[in-house]
Image (cartoon, rainbow, N blue to C red):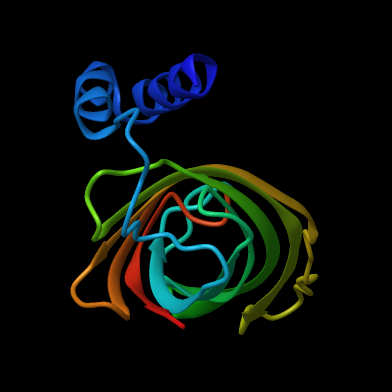
Length: 192
């Protein structure tokens, strides 16, 4: 139990800074968890808006759909699929060039959920691995120039911290922060 508690406290410190150490220590208990917000056998399905990206700055917001299955009261496996579209037009001296990008991430994840004394709060840390399908195009009315489109599809990976606050037994507000598909996500999850 000591090693498990130590790993949890260090993860919270890493994700939340020095104040996370004290907050996690206060929330965690060696007593058995009852009425946990993360329950073995349950599904957590929802959607979110994401900002920022491990791919670098991209404008707009990502639309994300996620699902997670509680293998145990502390271990969840899941996946995320999303869409991120962005375009920009540059006008100069009567000429227009338009850049368009789209990214579709398909990612699997594993999450360790911290045992909590609070029955409506779920905190976790996790890792993700998947694939980014990226495409881009360039359109221009500049005569004599041909612009090539490009793609940068490849491996998607990330680390994250997750928080769910249950408003009632089935509906939770969800926040996620880390490095990966997005830097910050906010949304809702439903527990089934």
